[in-house]
Image 1 (cartoon, rainbow, N blue to C red):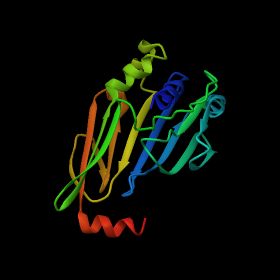
Image 2: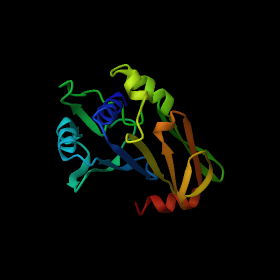
Image 3: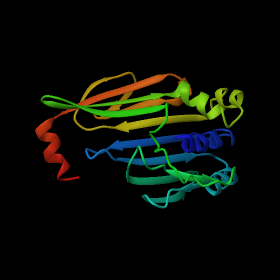
Image 4: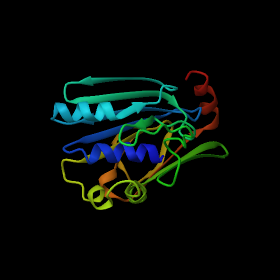
Length: 201
């Protein structure tokens, strides 16, 4: 997770940037992820693109569309695979990935309580600022301007139980990292539906 925080911190401290991460949950425990980085400055996008490297072990692709960088990762294991392995800022390679949902910032777990599977997801963006501050100037990271925005869109299956995020549509909620607070999402699915749908994913 620290590698992902370093990447996000690098992007935020680069200037006028907005980043959105869409995470689509799969029933087998993996997550599809789309990361969009937007800036009106072409040279800034080029610098960001050159400084972050997608994990080559993941099924992924990336491209630049006008003023946006797009990174797509399919069926990533959130606890054993990092999305971005290295940064030219430090030049090191993460050979012991913690997973992009590892660490203290993000938590995701599954529990069976008959007759439903329950899924619990939380994001502590206050903790994220603290962890990222270990590597970067904390005051700069915490004092984001209105032009530096990070959002997380979560696409879940089944039925919503509770969330303090913004409900964008059916089965989709948004967390705002700039709020530096604890967000949570809980959803559930009837166990027979869960088993049958796993066969089609």
